[in-house]
Image (tube, rainbow, N blue to C red; front, side, top):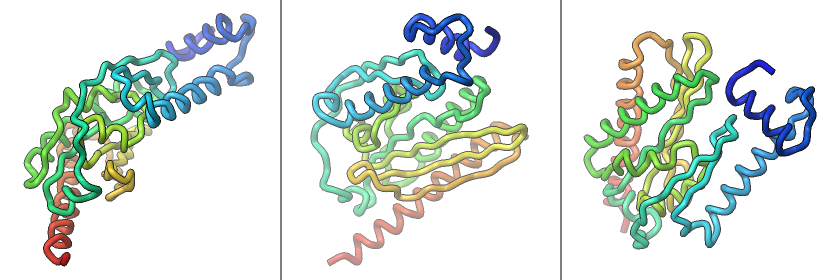
Length: 228
């Protein structure tokens, strides 16, 4: 069988695990992908409930991949602020999760990681934000974990996450901010760009994300001052 490394891995799993024959065709029999999706769903559910929420080892499968990823998480503080209090007062901690590569090209991972780092750097300059270090947020790379659980583990009030899709020279980048206490979106934006200068795009998008968050933080401060 010819194909990518993941195609060959799927073929091998079908034969070795599910007793398929050498004429196995993944386009006809999708058992490997179906079971992989089921496993991702079960892992996500496990880490959202006890005892998974306190499990120091995080196991995940990247979308489209069948090789498990293991992360040993740092122990985080159990002290949480009241729902939305930090954001209303304009003093919040934010974690930028690694942007997800939704394109078939593996080398897009570099672009996604670079985008994530640019956003971290830009947010570090926003007044009233405490930005979680890259070394802490990148332990969730490739993982499917509920935003509330990530916030609890990182002691973060806000999460920034997103994805990158590439078609030819066109990029479609989605970014969103999530309140970890409630799991609700603070905002979500889609950016469409033509792939010319990679570094310029990363810098522009990072500044846009920082600007959006700065506006929402300012609105939160104004609301807090007007509240009785």
